[in-house]
Image (cartoon, rainbow, N blue to C red):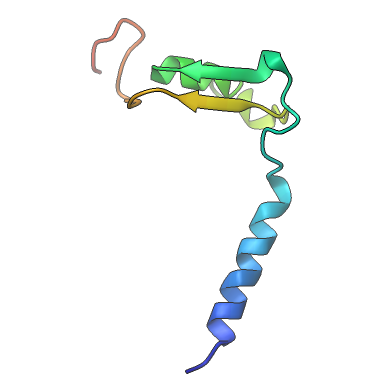
Amino acid sequence: MSTHGASRAAGARQRDRSGTTGGAAATEDNVFHVRTWQEFRAALGGGGNAGRHNTEPRIIYVHGELNAWEAADGSLT
């Protein structure tokens, strides 16, 4: 059995971790408890591209299930 594929996969996982630091350095203002999709998006830094470029450490606790199809008023779109 060849181990070449396994070592390559392990190497890929190692590279993937370089951009993730976790939330250990999150300040109290960046610890979120979310229950809705809108709260989740806000915790990530907002919608659109704004959240993609926000690299502040944060911790997000998700309570229950999130539904991306749920509107702000609770109805499903």
